[in-house]
Length: 399
Length: 228
Image (cartoon, rainbow over all chains, first blue to last red; front, side):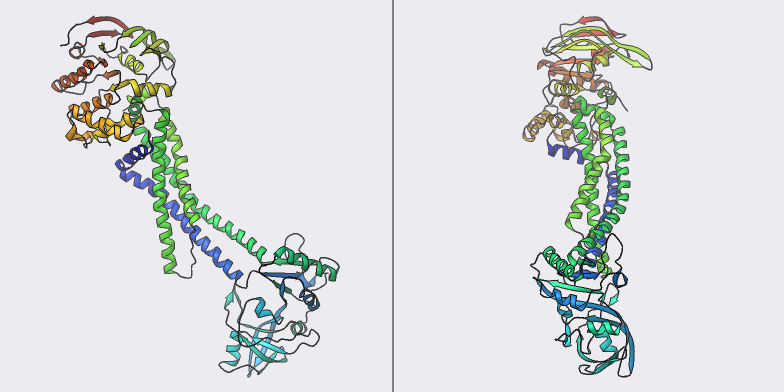
């Protein structure tokens, strides 16, 4: 039997039992729709989260005090480890490939200006903070000299703090009280918005040395090292590790590269996408049961036809192929309808709710269609085997 | 052409062995026209199924066209059926969702014959059996006689050496039945071996050789030298 004839014959029974075929195909279509829709949303979410995380650039290595030995968080500055100091940060500046080193401290303090008071997040950073995180200064600039002993009382305002305290006026050159100390405003950041719930604009940025004093901390919360994009991240990590080990005597710090963190995050998000896809897969299973049912019925109904085909010289394999072909046709067409429906609904949702990220990778569409066909094949195997193994004489005389 | 030696066929019904055929010896030459008659349950259909390789003897040997076909595998049986045997049934056995032309084409499709070759053969068969204007009709749009003509056209599409007809006129009125028998008998003139199973003496009596069966055994044979 030639392949086009197989297609023609299976299509003929598909057309002859239109309603039934439509309903069976619908079962698979709904399953594929669910899978495509859920994975589209999952993948959209995946990309959304990753872009949130990678907007500061990906060539960043973070160093935190304390060594993560197994799982769980590190003991941080409260552990019996040497805290990371500003001198540690300076020591890393001249390593190969390193572009910027940013010491970082964070805390809360009251800021006051123009008779207005606001409680806000105080970021203690280095002079290269904006550059390292690819953030932009709207007006003014960061401080340019950095003296660990005698850091000057200068502050760069987040956009929101500027808006709230200086509403409209030019704040540059004005004085601002942070935790009771006087700071001169030398810059205002561009609005950045919220990043995973943290409002980047509701902050004031002061030199790290000042912040440590103000917040009464003996060490940095972390340091960020940005390196040249062309450099090998592992080589950079190795040289940082060596330098810090020389200084501390042991490896009492943790190095996390943005690249690795993104990889871990990406794999977690992949699992989530896969899990929601699997949930949709349950409805695919129901569709498969539908195909199994309909094909079992078809074999029973068409027993005498099977007998006839055998009398006309059909081999067992040909009968098997005919019924498997029918099951696959049902599931393939159902799968295609489901693809169209799933992508359509996903895009429709995106139009209705632009905030909802959706994305359907081609690979998913192809995989979904392949799995539909595979499911049809699997569901068709038992009935088709039964058809092929029928005794020709008995089948011929069946009613 | 066909040689059966001591062929028996028994079935297991419940825990009992029932012999449907007992020690059948039968020789049929190429181009023979044989009718097998007998009451129902006499084993004539079982014999036909055996000859048509839809079944296997429990014992004995069956030679078809010079070769031993007693112990063929399913696959081999199918090949022989496809190439050498044509079937015509009482209930026509047309595939209801396929057109007359497509029904006639089925054995050619199953044998993997090229579409071009199939087209000419089917067109010729439709013409031979006066079905050209019915080519695109489905079986339920055809009369009984037309259906059986489609069935005969289908049975002959692979140019079989042996044509087996199981009560070919059973579902037809007398006039149509006669018409169908005429068509079958024309094939004998083309050196096709025709075997007709029937319980109707008027139909069976038309054959050159008339084999009578009772209880799974051949009880006698009449020969008539002229076609009616």
